[in-house]
Length: 563
Image (tube, rainbow, N blue to C red; front, side):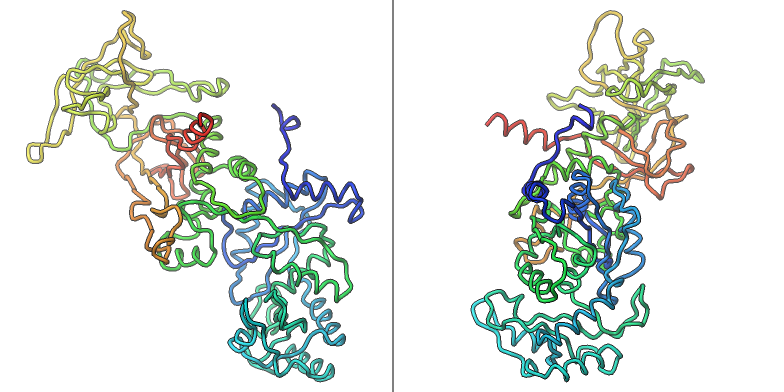
């Protein structure tokens, strides 16, 4: 099935858009936006929003803006802006020339606020942040009006101007919308529109010392940009009446806000506050640590843009929150890498094997298939010599029942090579640990088949000791031990997985990986999918395990079909 024939995604948001187009709403336009705050790195949850906003615009031949909600200079950095742009492009979307910032509209937002003051719909309040919270009331009790609520228009205009030119200290005053302190929706109880922050902004410098709050900045930005469908996560559903109130009171162009359920993923956290804690407290090695659910982290781990887009399409868009199993994300990357990753051989925990009847100094160049899923990827040569390495786990001196790999007197197949039989075991005299195996090979089984038809039950991967490249393999596991971190203890950090990273520094990979570049992806046969890390060099390659070969999600789907 080609891309044109592929069934297009369907969900309640796309149905709304289709109905709007049918009714010629918004002049039959579709214009969305992706509005991240530049106060951290994007994570897999943002990928869902990226694919939805850009994907819907693309599907309906519309436009999607990239807009940075840069209204809090104390937490925002240019580093975050650049990382966000890199992540969106990596996932596969382009906003062309439509790159905007809420800070582009600060002057306009100020002017609109003045209009609301003149209409008696906004006032300057001297209550502190704690007092505002206290006056707001609760879900069951109405709020209490601020003693400054009934200031005259003239006084409010004067005070707001003084706030703008920096006459008051941080936190001393705010501009609030005058709505309804008895509203059943707490968001409508005179929300703050502007607060005082004497802090340098990464784009506007020191021009401003008052900054708009999200609820005000967001709807005004949408209106200015001519957005048709303002797609938000579900926590903003209770904010929609405020979104509508601001635009209605200002009498400006009015987009439609639609909410969808955010992504919740098992064995991880997607709260930006919690992710910042993990980074700042040293639980991970930065925002792009491959254990992090950040887009930069999963990119470094070896995930592909195609797998992320496929994952977002599979989980769909819903109105209710739910938990998505991490196994589905892993299934999506396995499915993609299975088609495109070159197969290679790598030994992570080496055990030396001497093929005693193989001529010393001789080297065989054997043919190995690069990817059985894609014959077009061809073959490569792998060297075979007298001394090899195999995985320690592929040998048992006293094999348990059902163990079909190598043991004394047992014959196995070496991938693409020969049948070998273990004839002797060498051990460390002090510890008794097996350090070396002596084996014989059958020259007639070159290529891995026996001319006399005898069968073996196991095929092992291997590398030639004299040709292999020493490498480091970083084996990553879930960052947390519980599906919902902190659910039992109340502190997500108590469920951190102490075994989430195992670094194996004495690995050996086949010589074809000598030119592996950062980001190159491979399947290490029998060991999983791996990606060359940015720390990797020609002298010391480093590979991150993207995902194991075990496919939990496929088993889940199989069981579901049976039931």
